[in-house]
Length: 202
Image (cartoon, rainbow, N blue to C red):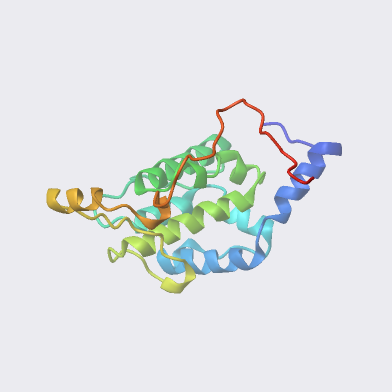
């Protein structure tokens, strides 16, 4: 893979806007959670955005993370550190596939190049936030760390109604639908006809 030089013009402006979305405080919280969730064996990133990217770049830490959230069979069987670019990208893809099966929506997913090339690390943060929120919401005993690090996702509250209750509801006219009491068409003219304005003053 060829190294790219610095970007200029519009490309540089777009990249600058993406970089501004990256949250340094969120980086610290996510790092703390990943270490608590996996174990200290996953290591510690160097301070700063580039250090955080390099820590996650080979996909090993991410694969360990998704495996730690599974109580049964681990979704990723083989996690192997490699210096080869295609192997690293393959492991990131494995994490993304496992995260999607876990329940992360496609809109919350980052692309492999977002992490590997550092194109959009804010998107990586967004995916990990969604993963943490889902783990806290599931509350299946696999989540480790402070539950206050993530907000719980809203859960569907499905209700069942009997046929009698449904029929009873159909006969009620809600106040937001208005009322037809006192309605009259007296004095109305047909559509398209001009209104007569009569001046009765002498």
